Image 1 (tube, rainbow, N blue to C red):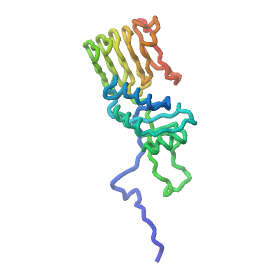
Image 2 (cartoon, rainbow, N blue to C red):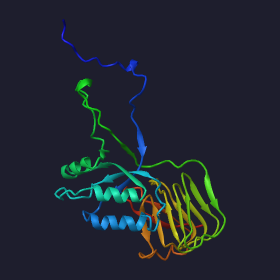
Image 3 (cartoon, rainbow, N blue to C red):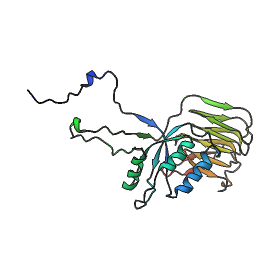
Length: 258
């Protein structure tokens, strides 16, 4: 009798599933400090249930980026951080640019690698390849069609979010009000509150205002507040805000002339 051997079904016999590559849109959390106590405190203050923008995220997938963490930094238990992210309506699923210590901590926390170096060896037999989940981050999400139009002034405490599209505001955005869009933001009046364009990572998004006097502006997460005074040639003037094209994540604030 021949020795028994395991029989693996051929792809043609698999009627219940298929394995395909996938690109999943997600946001990235760039971890800039090993002070997790302060990090979780600031996350709560910004996006927690009682924070400034509690509804900013809607159970969005997030990848933790450790590229700014020193290689010699001792890794920490990620469980408290993941718990805070979930409280902020973010679902941590992956990590990238981590040292060996942080990689071990992230894998122990149930995260998967999101880096391109996770590849199957071309020389290895298929039977010896273990299926390791790979998640590729989409840097720029293309806004969906359509535009949201608001034709009434926005008062302090009011927030408008144009999900998947541009936002056009035909009246004043007062101090304490907040306008958010996945695409561009156009304010055909005074912008005195907060404006966040490219909310889901669209680095090509822009903010336009007839009178630029904001408390805060942000493009794809890169922000500037009124604590850092705007130049006199743009403050109160017709202007646009965009990200620089050199990859430095720098906000450019430019006056627009007729």
